[in-house]
Length: 440
Image 1 (spheres, rainbow, N blue to C red):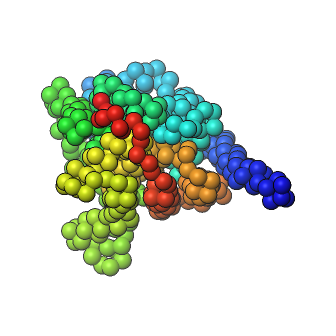
Image 2: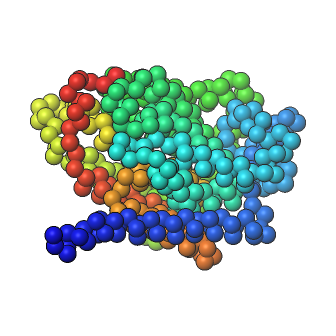
Image 3: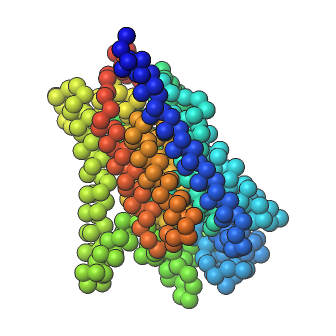
């Protein structure tokens, strides 16, 4: 036996050792960052105060979309009228406004624990801790959610529930044909949470990549679309007095108050394109701004995603006969594990392309990322942890201003490319379960 063979087990364990140490360091930094925020004397929680002030105004018979009717704030209430009664139990007796930091922390941990896994060979405490770490620290999205008190914490929780219902607890359930009713419920939850913030509606298109027969995928998308429209219809019918005020508020037609117009500062590809058009002296030409936005979304996100999926379909034995969409459908059915990964990647990509991607919205992006990171190889996971958590957290601890910059967007793009590179590199074998026929 040679000296090299004696050292082989140590060599195999070395990546795990340094990766574990890096993960522990990142987790420590995240906890330190959250502790620094909680110990500062800054009065946080402006969004939770706005939301609960709107509920109180509605109870008093006032128009909650008029900022002057909201006590203690100059910010506007952007959500559908039906949410005023949905949020009422949360805001009763001022409990949420007074204790939201602890509640949000528990909910963020719960998000990580609820998320499904994609690799049947891996599971347990390590993967759960990685998902929780990603939810708490990735892109400093949770830090912004915690600081602002934004209700994206609840949409993040619904995202985790939707993913658990749509994907199950892993590909073994996908292979065995998890009940279609669960996926219908997951699609409905996804549709409802996108109605919470309307600009994320395109995420529903990612349901097409689920490993289901085409007619069932269309049913899932239809259910999600109905769930998306339902709160809007309820608001227009049963809150007819408030619905026009909501339309005026979100379109910036109420003069002299804060507006949630798309061109306000946020780290999105649209605002990046707006800044570029401003540098070129073309900012007044809206078609140019939106053309730049579309080109950026295609070049940075959508085209790399489409090329990666088409390459996987081409290289992994998909039949050459039939239309491209038919070949994609057969490949998804034959590779349920990869189909689940592609579905979440598509959700991540479409969310990342949103025109209004506020700082706290990166918490929900972190939920999608948390599903994908746990079975990355060592080098890819180290790169992801560095780009998504380590560098943004160090910047936050050092006091660097993130608001008004594109730091979170850059981190989200880099991590998307890391995930795509891993998807393209990993070997794919036709799942043995596919030989038994289509899944339910």
